[in-house]
Image 1: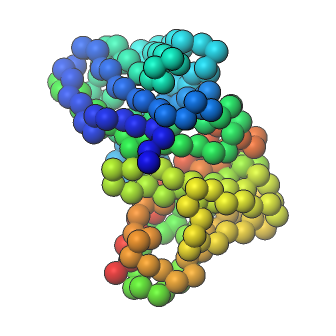
Image 2: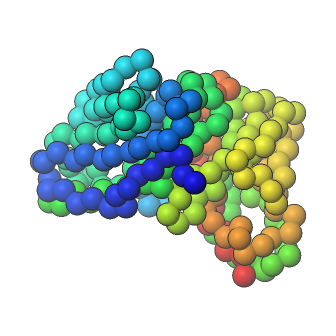
Length: 113
Length: 114
C-alpha cells in the first residue's frame, strides 16, 4: 500500500502557464516533504522541501504548498518552461534527518513550447 | 568533483548469477544509500550507511548485501540474481546522516535479470 501517492502519471502544460503537481500521503507521522526532479538517464535532483510547521515554501518559480489536515501537498511551477519537462517525485520522511525516505511514483511533466 | 558515480550504466544477468554494483562519491559524505526504482513505483530504499563500517537495512533489503569499508565507496552486491531484481538502481550520498534535502544521486544502473 503506497504511503505517498501521485495520482497523475503525466501532465502537459503550455509554456508560460502554471504547472500544478499533486501529492497525497497517508502516514500521519510524515512531517517533512521534498520534491525531486529527474531527467532521463540521470539521477533525481533535489528541488524544494517543506516542513510540517509551514504551509508554503517558495524558491524562485517553484512553490510547494502543504495542507496537513488533508495530507496533501502540491508543487506549483510558474511560469513553466520547456526545460522543466521531467519526472517529478514527491517524497516524505518522519522528520528532517530521517533515513526512511518514502517516494511517490512520480509525475511526468511535459511543457509544450 | 565527480559527485556520485555508478558503474556499470547497464547490465544484463542470468538468473542465479552474482554481481556488484559500484558506487563512489568524492564529496567526503558520511551518509550513502541505495534505492531501486520500478515502473509505477517510487524509489525504494534498499540499504544505507551512516559512515564507514556501519550499514543498515531499508525498506526492501532482501537479496542484497552492502558493505562500507571506506567513506568513498558503497558497493551493492546481488548474490543470486532473480528476475524480480530487474530495476534501475540509484546510489545517493549526503554530507550528514539524514540531512535529507541535500542527498545527491548518481546517474543510475539499469539492471536486467533474465
